[in-house]
Image (cartoon, rainbow over all chains, first blue to last red; front, side):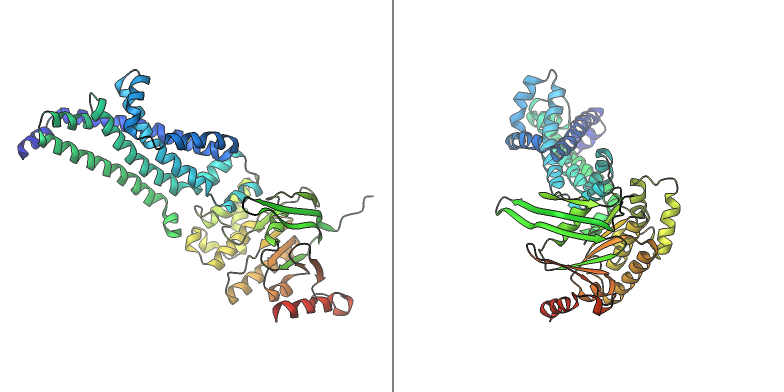
Length: 214
Length: 243
């Protein structure tokens, strides 16, 4: 392996442009997925009727592999970038939704009694009791979700991308530049680990009381 | 002039049942009638599974009944409840846990002073910035009691609040509870399995058995024996259940 190619590549702007595009895609898809997963989980928790209708649908859609969504995304969305963000959304949404949905289903009833005794309205009950109560599950969902989003964005870029670290790695493979493939894989690993580390560090700081209970 | 009701809580023909997928409808109690006199401590004794905790939750409005009515007098009474566990929100400090109830009840103008007074009264000043996981079980129950009583409730419901405490902590908690009761004169219902605790704290002792088995006694230690016609029956119960 010629390490000078890797060192040379690290000084080129192209590599960083690709990293930037991947980061932009992953953060967009992941953020949308988190908001939708949290709101949908809260909605299904509050309204049993919606739960009965939507949960079975989600359970049918959940096992579809991310690659299976690629043709649909290309057909539905106008640009390649939008379809990559959609694939990233799918990769992050389902694990985050299931994690949050289960956390809400198992929410300790005693904490809900507080809301009833002190006659809290829906907003206060959600923001002062439920969300702090599932905060450790929210962080778990974020950590699982960002991994799912990262795997999906790389896969989507490899299949249909024009930019991004996945596209960079795949293009290098087709051009038989194994040094660049190796570099791409290392960058994917490091960035994925940094995402998880980011959420783990915040969780460690903010959720000291959960760790002690566990 | 309307006659003033001497009962704080009246349970009228209350039937409670649970619907279970496995067992179908399970009746906890049927046509239950109980009265709880105002300004007294009522201890409820009963075997596990007889519906004591359910009764408390029904009174607090946390569970619905199938049939019957619960009359709270006056109907705007503030009801506070301490459950067996999880009485404190683990993500809040002792101070914030106590303030939570006051803020929720919108006694906001002077809630800091009320919390400080509560902390002082219960000797919790040094623990005000502690989180529940940093407290012993005894202290947690003390904070729960402080949190409940700072709101000046008319009715205090306690579900075996002292059962996890050691002998010394339990005695201290009893003292705090009795001292608050003597000052505030709320109506209190205490669930317990401890006969000693019942006799020490209760003005009235309610025995709740499975189904519709219910009896009410005046505490023989708080009322002269010869005036209490149920005394012998109460003694028989104790001999039967605890020896």
